[in-house]
Length: 140
Image 1: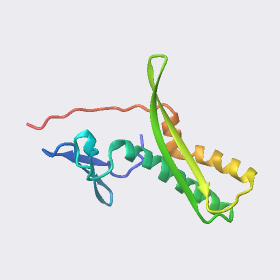
Image 2: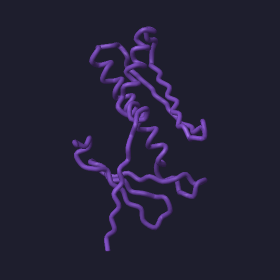
Image 3: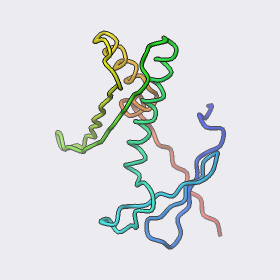
Image 4: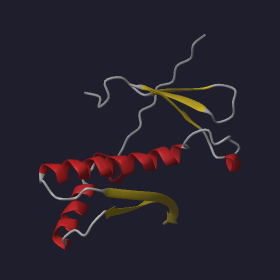
């Protein structure tokens, strides 16, 4: 097995309700819950981070493709959100993603770029089967 990240992302929460510190390869970021949920809104909440992953992956994947194919597209914007729906007594998560360009783009190119967006690694993870393995430890 080969991990995607050289070092794992790690986090810590102390006594302050919902505020976490997330450590990543280049520093740290704070996450929190919105005030309406009891947090102080000091940073993005987990849903915002998940959606941000989809947005940033989509943008980077499209930029790589556009640059490789030397397409004349200077600006890309992606917005996304998610909602939950109960279907057949199961919660199903839907992601809505909108991609727009700073100029007119030919229809056949737009269709190809949509295919490329659907191939971004985070899109694939969200659409596929993911397994979360958990190990518990206690430090006496």
